Image 1: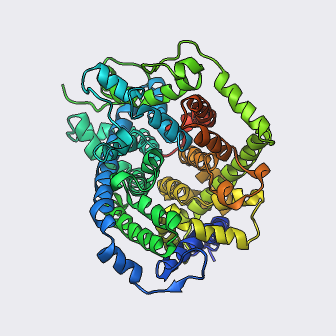
Image 2 (image 1 turned 90 degrees about the horizontal axis):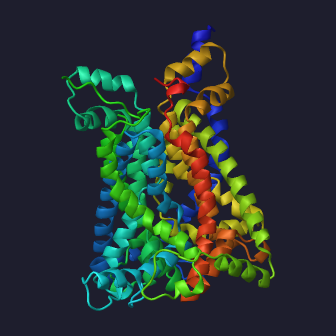
Length: 301
Length: 290
């Protein structure tokens, strides 16, 4: 057998692939895939976490669509609004920021990127401390105090139990922390764009930076654009931490109840794990639809 | 004059960049203020925490809040250093194994052709989109069945496979030109050679970004300490800091302590980011991808 055919065989069927994949695949199957499958199976059962799950067919799904008023009236609309603003808005913002920063020299770029990324690093603990203090409901709260000084309001607003302000607050905090790993990968992508492409594009008649962005930058970094899009979608649909940390679960009047909060409400407060699992599967389907759309937009072919 | 095309990643400052800075600056400031607030708050003495109207800036910085934090851990019976040790051990173990396994798997999924390859990638994407809260109980059962409860393994093993990290790294491996790999094959390189000498050097930005991502997941993880570990001495720093601040964060006096705890959890993230940012943000221009 000649060297050539040996090589081409290695490129078509390569047993070494299994070896490289094995360690990851093993741990992935045990700790991620199996739990996901179990959760999907549980969605067809009635499971109170104590007794053995009882098979109920599609009952949970039927209940979700026909009988869950809170879900239809508050949770779904809230999630759609949140995902549109934080998901789409955050994505556009992340791209624009990454693109702007890529046009700066290394030192200011690094400092700005660090600041923009820093909210992502302050999860959990910081959330409660920081935002609860900011939005304290009496005149000792920072926002109330500032707004009263400015004469915008006369009386302190009880931000975190207000059905009017809670969702906007959650959205603002969501946007604040949306420059995550997707933002970093977009920036890496832009910085890695082949410079000769820009020169060639200029010869071909590209006239300004905006055209460059559309015709050169984005097409040459589709993998990173796709990664960031999926991250943004997953993040926007799966983030329920903000609302429950600020206002508890369920949030007052379900004002900022997102799908994840709904799942936690059923799974860990009412112990209806079967139903919670069904809602999770529904959420998975929603996320799948949106990620399919972004794959269409940024897929390799 | 015809448009010449601008330069990404300029080497030095030019007047044209002022426009961009002015555009970015408001958002940078808005994003940064809350972080600066946490820093100020952590160093506020009692009378400034109680000040009315509330003060943003600390005028008399003090270490009182940090002192209280350490005192609380002394009375709890388990020294703070034990939690720090646990978290360091777990974090280092997870970050290294996760990066090695994810890069190896990415290489296989992107550049080696074998049966089941595309299915594996699809399953990975599918799992990535499943909301973590829903798998908590099934995962708890698995940790239990495997007998990992109350061991360091319960912290480490479940966190090593991170579908997001695999996805990220694979997206970068996809961009490594096939011609380079073929050339290496022609020179008689084996797969392990190509992985170490061709793939790894070329995807450094991805590895650095994934390192930041994995680190954050492990460092702030409380699932293991909450559900798989009963032994106080095996719990993580994130868990301990969280109990401290969720217990005291609701009182004004406790806010300072909680801010100090947040700052302690925040700083390692910051340090890692600063160390790795060169790799994240510098171009791969020198690595031969052109």
